[in-house]
Length: 488
Image (cartoon, rainbow, N blue to C red):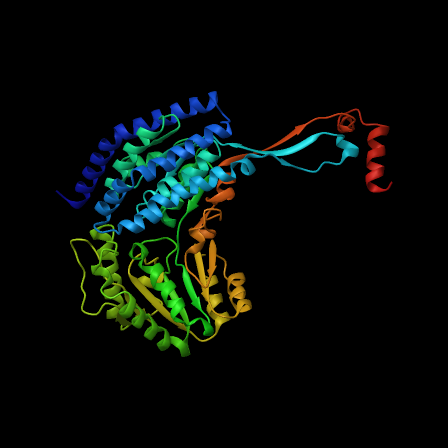
């Protein structure tokens, strides 16, 4: 059998295996749409009930979630799973419940009483309807359930599509959601590539996708067929910029700590570090010393996360091999420690002053490689960053507050953090999302509530107005209004 024939057969088999899931997806969409028509604007009490159910589902099943995440990743710390995959979305639900009164309140707008009398003019945020959430593999519950918080808070119905790269998590999420919610409120769609493609082609009222820019473009093209609005969170090469005063042990602790979260498999991790050329060796020494003193043998401990697949591990190894063959300086932070192929755990390596053409300089790394890039002039370095695709996160370190603000103002990104990394993604009240090729739209907090709501302008006509001047026939009264406005 030729490779081409094998590929066709594989695709046919995948399409056949996903056929029941696609049929069920379409049934779920029809059920939710019919339910939405009957109850288009849930009360606050209903929304609170749904949010409490979501939070309770996660907390009550934390041990099962820990086990499923560890199974899919090969190795994963239970405490970090508690912090991000369980408490992250559960805490988001609690924060949304506390804020619901403010979020749901109509916003009163000004209207000139000379024309509008005592009319009430307001913007109302109403549910969009049925929303699809395509979750990524790296945070199967945090992103699988986190945005569902704002979707439910806004009064919507939701179908979650987990990644097929985390089958244990997908199966567990499917089971837990079915136990917790009526299918016409929240349900899941579990399957492979053909289901994912079908998911993007449905007539959603809104579609959220988290993943790569390349797939994001395909999602947006498919959604355009039905004019479906999209929220795209797409990642990117997030830089950490060290100013001259920012080369410190505290900065190194934040950079390494962030990079080792999920072993670099996080959309807002530090992709690479920029440092003044005359401080390059100081930074390398600090990185090596911190790893030796605080993180000895990290990749062999229970705190280390495995890379998601053998294919992804091979990709990271190929990047490292290419850098080594190109003559880049490789600094192993766990010298003498190799890759544990059973758990796909790979130690972190620095790639110092790599050539610009290397694959790790062109692609989002998404693994345990950290390029360290010297620069001679800060503004030139910022211009070079800003000339590339906009990152999802930007990090800057330094003692000079004005200089740090200059970096944030100069480089456009989805979010930013001064003297820290990735913290902007951990605050429940802070809108989170990308810019340019790193995405569009926001979730978290009131921005997420607004993202998944329809902003509806409503005028409740009062008395003693002169709005009849807008209608024909136009005469002396309309002329008087125009003269008063223009001073005629």
